[in-house]
Length: 112
Image (cartoon, rainbow, N blue to C red; front, side, top):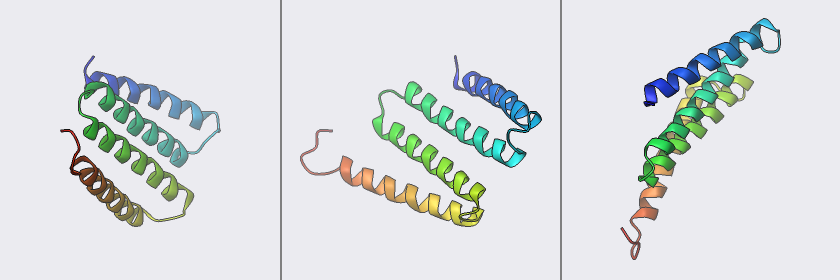
């Protein structure tokens, strides 16, 4: 299965879930968009772990990006911050995470 096939199947399932949540009155459109977006990001990160099993740095970077996107979407949905602030905070956190990983990976005495 390719990543496009996997993510296409996930998107189809999430579209069904969204439709059911909205039609049953369980959640509004904005909430279902947040839920499905977050689940899609996490599914993408999970696929990245599966497909790139040899590159730990890429796996961690993908997971950090997924978690940042999910947390930012949640904060915007709840009204804690606006979209521009979420974007700036996400970029700053991702940059700090990459810098931290780079320092960790290149420390003296570490096996390459």
